[in-house]
Image 1 (cartoon, rainbow, N blue to C red):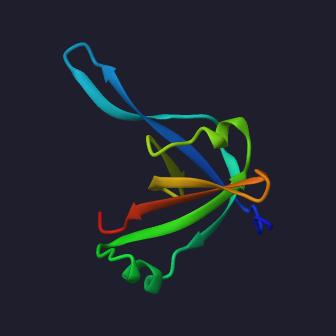
Image 2 (cartoon, rainbow, N blue to C red):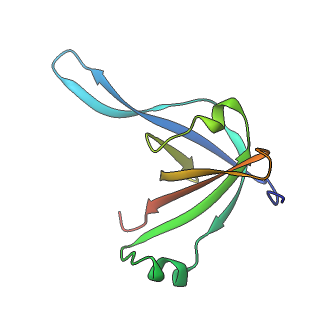
Length: 109
């Protein structure tokens, strides 16, 4: 099993709660460094079978497996080309050589 071309650069953010002196504020903060990935968009037919109806883009990103990428959760999101992709889930590919991340971004903002 191969990851295809790892020809895109993606970065990650983690959901955090910070105190601004007046109240707790929910925000996203940079998490880890940028990594190389391949990206495949989920087909419209696959989205319709799943019952997904909205102006969104669902994609699968494949990255090399590392301690960092194995620790990604839905509390994290991917930043790619100015879009924020919320992580839905991850799975191991092969013998833990790669991690596939399924994520979605809103396109109607």
